[in-house]
Amino acid sequence: MAKSLNILLTSVGRRVSLLEAFRKALADLKIEGRVLAADRSPLAPAFHAADEGCLVPPVGGPEYVDALLTICRTHDVGLVFPLIDWELAVIAEAHERFAAVGARAVISDKAVIDICRDKQRTCEFLKRHRLGTPEIFTYEEALRRPFPLFVKPRYGSSAKDVHCLPDEEALRFHYGRNVESVIQEYVRGTEFTVDVYAGFDGVPRVAVPRQRIEVRAGEVAKARTVRHPAIIRQSLRLVRALGACVGVVTLQCFLTREDQIKFIEVNPRFGGGVPLSIYAGADFPRWIIEEHLGRKPRIDPDAWKADLVMLRYDAAVFRRWNDVAADEGAGAGARPGAKSGG
Image (cartoon, rainbow, N blue to C red; front, top):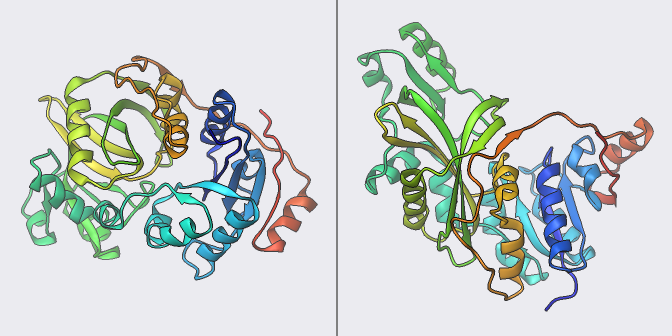
């Protein structure tokens, strides 16, 4: 059994709860280790909640992976978890480089990521495997469809530029701004996020549906766990069909008024609301750490609490401005993280 393990969360942003879940998993397993946080900005709250906050260049830059590799070498990182859509393909392509410095990137196969990043391909995949999903229309087809409709960027993330189209004028306006858009039927129903655990062998074992009660800026603010057998069954089937998934895959779907399940998003990473599933008993951080260390975690697919509610609120991190400004001007590097306050 390893005596120590350091973990790196990248593009950490506001993910303080997830960071604390990894810290708790290490403590529960009696493993010495630190949880590091990488971000392009020292103003990211979780940057200061980490044991070490590490500044890195923007994800799209050529130096991004090199900066992460430097952190892994310097701090003896064993596991790396990318947390935003934009970096998934970049880290997947570099997974062997991470392995060469002793760090295991918890990342699905590049082919899986390509399907999930492209909303058009996601729809085609779901249809091919006879999984429910909203119909997609070309612009010309949409003009002949009854409104409302729905539009979102083909390669979008975090619900940015996602709009309900009440009429033809709105369709012309939003499609004219971004022809790389996906136009869908408007689905009415209850929205769910589903956290699916696939571990390192790609076999989905646990699915936890979370009803999205309130969403703020694309991320769930209020939610509850719901034991819905059909959603669980179809979510496991979806991840099994994808194949080559690693870690946690986050799905979004609607349960329509006719009890149809229609999947709208597939994200091969930890979702923003995953702390609810973890707190309910699906201890994804612990299971991943155990698998990484060669242990077989005890996973009961039903041993999580239904009807557990998460009500998120804003907390605060307090730092001297001169310290934050110095961090921001320092470029890629590392500094000890400060504890967050409420």
